[in-house]
Length: 490
RNA sequence: CGGGGUGUAGCGCAGUUGGUUAGCGUGCUUGACUGGGGGUCAAGAGGUCGGGAGUUCAAGUCUCCCCACUCCGACCA
Image (cartoon, rainbow, N blue to C red; front, side, top):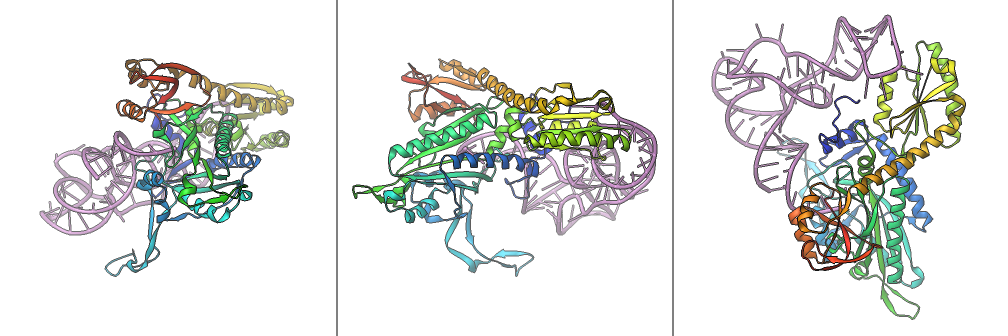
């Protein structure tokens, strides 16, 4: 057992915070609401970045980079967009500091006021569409399929490591198309890429659907999303893909001549996932002993700990481990052999367990005699003794098994927290228990808002390929065509 | 922005009605013994008590002002 570590039962959010901090993933910085992502945490993000980047490129996208600053006037061009982001923008008003004549330090030089203030991007649609205007004249210029990896700033009132920080890292795809159909297909394609990534790499099962108008991205016609269920029963939006229609093309006057020599507005999409995924990863799999990482994203997949008395013994072990390590690395497995003499074996066991390393091997004098090695798996904490000559097959097999087990475990958890609800009384009782409630909804924003006001639950999404089922709205009793997902969310 | 709370060693905290040299846990350094699940013992290093002003013979402790952080709401990827 880890000492002095909160359990999920005692206090879920404390457990999460301590986990992030003690597993060396991230910490709060001197700047309120902004985090420092530490090397171990960044290594996980880096792997996510690399995998996603490949997936984007495999689907025809290229990377570009647009500025951090956006002229204030750009923001007011798209009415809904402005409303959505105005309340959380960091604004640059001056470009120079000077010595404080009245006291110590520096003050903002009042003479260095910018003619037009610059917004630190909360998202880049506006600056990108202002740029695309210059790139697009003909249908031959389309489609444009760009992605950028960047940091953005949203001045949030309350922040939590990874889940909501004032500055966060993300990728944002911005595409331009000649037809509505093509843009819609793009938006849907990308939400499926995200679902694929979440399920097959992060081992997080997700439900896929479309947002209700209330929850839609500011300026979008449709927002597709994937939603995951956390262990405490709260939902977490893991990725969004927006069909923007011609809203931004009209706001920034981006037109092209089609084959019939007629001027048309361009159709757009944007889609993104952020470092918030780290929060989802942590909360989905981890337990009261610390972090649990799916092998495909673990910075260290196998940790090897030697157990020895004298240094001569260590030398003997080193020789055996060297072969094991080389063999595993040749199979593409990331191995850390921790033969530091500065820490005890017990300390190392806890360290790697807490950091979520999927497989740990331990080898000592006893093993050398028997030709064995101890293998421990992080997901179930089981330990087993295997023959040394089995290591090269047993370890990769175990990694695969853990990856699958984590996914299955998370899926069972989600299924157990998902259930249909048919009356308002039942809804109010069940929402307190957490999880997804599948309920009928009359399709109106008014009803959705009332449900939110009374229960803090929001419609997480309307399933795209959901089963059509005639029913009555759980709140208003009006007719409904299908059930939607309700939950309290992060 | 509204309502609580907290600022004392790297981190986590104690410090009573003001009273001598400001403590404890952990971490850190050195050494010895140890080593199959966070070892034991010993010796050390480490402090503008958030900042400023005031009351007092005497302030970590009382008063006032300021600052920072944090939690709970409203807002949100």
